[in-house]
Image (cartoon, rainbow, N blue to C red):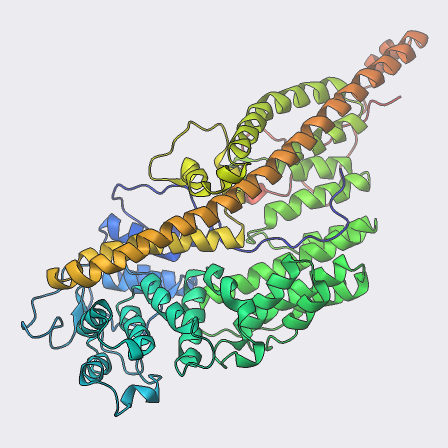
Length: 626
């Protein structure tokens, strides 16, 4: 039951709450930051703020800013303050939430004079500086020229309406790629990111020879970074020659090539691609982390430790980007844990413990590092310390977020080594009773979709647990789903699907003439793509569920083995006592109490958990082994 001797690639990504309250309630800075710190997506935090109906004061805004809240959260607090409306930020910076309907405009165009879309001005100084020079082609039809002029004049709603009509009528088939590109630009300015992505993809599929390819691909990368979902890029990355990657997309595409090669177990090729990622890229640390994992899987432990240490020590400057800073903190914490895992694998448990101890309390992975450190202490026979760490990770503070069933088995093993057999048997019987129902539900769920036909219905698998109307009463704990949603690919898909829902709401808020034409067309795109995304999410969910089923099954087997060993140990213990009849009276006469070190003050645990006491629990169990 040791930890893996190879340091696995721990999946990065956000953990999402399964549901958030829909009723309005007052929100404080602390409550908002609690949501941020557990990686609730920023767009959901923003919507929760809007639903609360609060007015945020200058102190609230200062608090959110100083504590590193995402820029979109701070911007929403400013919008809900009693002060003046803040200037809009350049897109893409946030997911669009519901807004008021746009004011009426002159009949000859969809936009008002300042192009107010959904209740705010879209005036931006630099949003159109990177429009291709080809946009001024004198040979273009006048209709295309007019649409591009509207876009440059910050009239994306009107521009999108005219460009859509050109596509719908198949008016200029020889200019279809150009129309797709500028329609995508218009939709991106309207913050309709999914349908913008769809139209950029129509351009990219034409290949590097198309004059708009080098403009469209960086836009796709920007949207992927915004949503956290690389699934569309992953479909095409291997079809594009690396020497055709435009400058604005190169680092991201090389990173994805590395991930793809790693997943296919082409480790040397993956390492080569990761080495192409610039040290100035936000993806550089992730690339180095992968390189460390690859070295480890190749058995090059010194190189692996060196790479992970470099990740931890790397000084990264990402100005004014709280999201990237949080990603950097996560990857550094994971690097520490993987160094610890390598030392654990070569049985240098004292070194492993030192690295686990470096993971900070505020880390997303703190509880996991404590649990793995508890194994390290167990292997060093620091049994009471190990029990204290297990008590921390099993405290109510981690009930919703940490699914660590192995912690109970470790606790039982520790008490077994202390020869407290009655405690071990009771603990394991409770464990088996609780987890047997989980095991059955996971087994049946995976089995329902194990056939080829079932795999084609993976979207239904997703909706079983995450649809708007859940189809079953589940015995699985929320902590298990939060663990599953830490899968980076799945987290990106979930965030992207949330943005689709918001995009539909935004479409419905536009002017009737636009929403009945362009809006209906865009909704069909979203509806078709949503099913594809739900299938992808369902397949990942099924894979994760199968992995957790296997883990639970292994732990159940281990539990039964330990209980068998308990019975055998109790038999030996009874035989010993039967041969030493004076033992019981001698034990009752001498109640030995071990003194504690003078530099520590020990308070008895009364069953209440306090956050500032976490990690400081220390058992004083005495071995009864003879």
